[in-house]
Image (cartoon, rainbow, N blue to C red):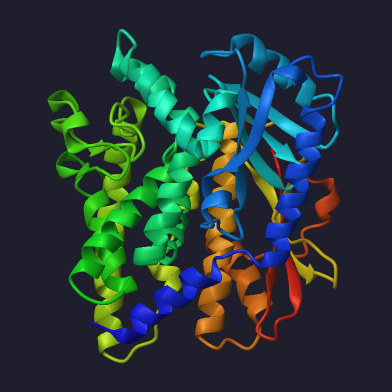
Length: 451
């Protein structure tokens, strides 16, 4: 096993972490969004108990180049499915020019804040009575106890467990933080999430990031119980688990007893049980078919990992671009195969980023496109660019900016001779992707196209 490949993976994963300046900027966006929700114009203002940032941001496992935000609004006297609230919420969010691309899916509202940050905003029922806090328990602890009691007392615990899962999100964050203190899971979690961004499974899949993180935690636990921290072994274990959904049975008992897991649930496959909720198999329904598709991509990545390990053992350099090459290739992506958005007339260039330039990728569209296609294109280009930059630096290439531009051009249209291509300002869509070159100078990759 190559220590060079292991160290290269760890270095790449650790560099995926967002800088503190970016974390601070997201914090400021949260403050501005919270003020917007507490404004007198929003008639649900008096029902809001608290607004809590959760997900990767709260767990401290975000990806720098694809940072997003999950926010849960805990509501007093309001129960699932929150139909009136989410309808009025969508209207209120759209009142501000700071929030665009609003899409409602069930109880979750997706939108882009200030043209850069993807936000998932979900409602949950506040179950914390004021008198409980005087007994020395935190709001999160009381919320956990009362929500599980509500699920247990319902007529269908499995169905209710799914509906109430958002109400347990604060405890889920605590779970990840505790695991990271013991097993240092954040390195593999970022690597797993990044890998997930390089593969395309079409459609919305609830909790995709959490699925990757939980499998990464289990993989890290297994490997560190047999020896010291090893990113290569842990990543191989992660891919092995993902590639075998029919054998996947993952659960923890920090927040409930093993006897609380019903036989029907324990015998389900694939099983990834919510660590805070014994009635919620995260891989139910659509997520089951999602894991079957992910398994095929994981097997390809396992072969690539073994090839990379063999090459490293022969003394050859680590090729991150080959290891994390997107699946499927650009021309095999769903919008191309089904002739939907049909990006064309591409423009690709690199410019100076400036001292106070972009900190997060930015997408601007003049012409409407399907949100699912937008997500696919962003994930593909953002992840491809990230690994192209890292791979070029790893190989010591003297002009990283030119190499990244060429790699993106060849990825989009292999064998094409690229000319000046006109102006990006005339294109229907424009993606701006910040990075730093081999000298640490800020640059921006511009990718524009017509629809």
